[in-house]
Length: 353
Image (tube, rainbow, N blue to C red; front, side):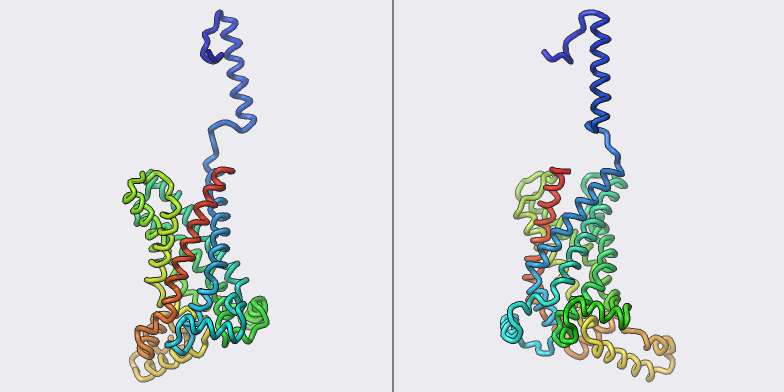
């Protein structure tokens, strides 16, 4: 039998056994092997895991999907709506070589790492805080969506200047003015640093409700797959569940908010598009003598809603979905990769930390 279970033969032996146990407890505390932990320290470690996993996931996904992202932007700003994705790709490669598809990668690669660093950091922190408030291990879909929307606020602030540079480098009529991505950044820093905030409102309109839907779609899909496969909800999702859940998240996000992204790309690459709408707004205001508020605000940049309305009036509703055929495959591939890399990276960090 174990020495911990045997009964002492006399009083003196009992005292010796108590001293041994006390020494063992002291040594375990001094070596840090006690089961007690600092909640603040645990939260910091969890946030670090979320950050690092998000960075890796964002970098891998951007390298995979960047050629399709380039096609998406070109479709959004290209005047010829009849070109197919294959024909447009062929034309670009013939004119400028295969590396044309990766032009301007450095800024969005950094941006993607920063985006998903922010996404999973803020979502994870929000989810843990929500669980501490509700005292439940499993949150409802609405609560998960609110955690996602919380991360969307940070994403909009982080992503706007990076996507401005990305769109400037992807569009042919703007990219020809710069020698490199860093030349683009240097140019706008000298000319007007506020240019980097172009499209902030549109990005916020896309990201805040978009990340609500994004995480609801992912978590809802994985829970549904567990239910259909008779897998307990407490178990980790399998690889195919993660891939399908990530694809569902990407389709949901881009399917609902693509028109806003199109307007954002136009705002960040074509000043004449904004000027055209501003001129139209001024004309309407000048014909309405009673609309003093409208007239006084005509000097400001048009809102994304005004830009969408103008595009529908001039080109039709279908024009809001230019490049959508490229975006959906990109969304499936990219977001499936994001969640797969994130989940496995997070699991690996859990084992070593």
